[in-house]
Length: 242
Image 1: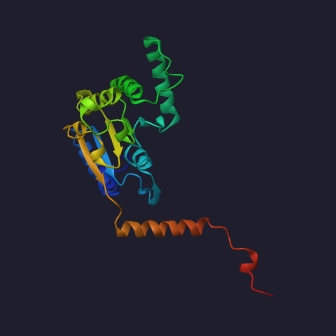
Image 2: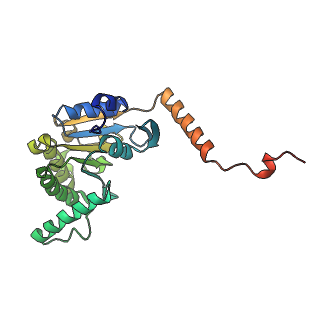
Image 3: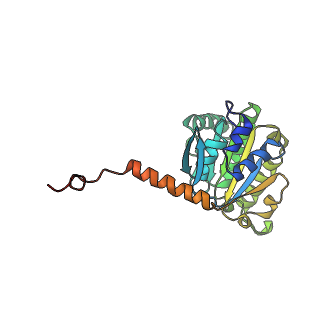
C-alpha cells in the first residue's frame, strides 16, 4: 500500500488511526477483506507531500491507501461499477470481450449494475488478473444493500449469491496470497449480514467522528480556502470616500 519512495513507517504516520489499523492488518497477510463502518460519509483529511486535502472516504482510499495499485474499482448498487483511471476501465472491457465470446453475452457493450451480474464478472476478472500478478483493490460502497442483515433463508436469491461470493473471496487462498484488498463500506455494521462480518477472513474497522482538534483544523482550513478563493471587495468598498 505504501508508495515505493516512502518508508512504510513514515507513510503510516501520515494516516488517520482507522487507516493505520487497516494497513497493519493488511500487512499481516492474513486478511483481504475489511468492513469499514461508522463515520463513512464525512470528509476526511488526506495528507500528501506536506499539503492537506479534505475528501470523501472513497477518494481517501483510492489516493492514499490504493494509489500504487494496478487496478482499483468501486461498486455500488445504484451507480454500478466505476474505475479509478480510464486505463483500468479499458483493461476490464478488453477482458470482457473474451468473456462475451466464450459465454455468448454482451457485457462489454453494457455493464450490469445488479450484484449478481457484477460480482460474477468480477470473480472471473479477479482470478485472471491475480494470475497476472496485478495489485488490486475493490471498494464496495453501500454494502448493506448487497449483503443485508437477516437470516440467510429469508434473503433474496441474489443477496444469497452475493453473500456466498464475498465469503468465498474473504478466505480464498489465491486472494490471500495475492496483493488484493476488498473494502465494504456501510454506515452501520449491524446492517451487514452477520454471516459475513463474523467470518474470520473479514476485519471490521470503525471510522470515528472527528475530535475537537480535527474539527478545528478543518474549520481553519475551510476559512483559509475561502480567503484565498474569495472575490475581491467592490471598488467602492476598497476606496475611501472622496
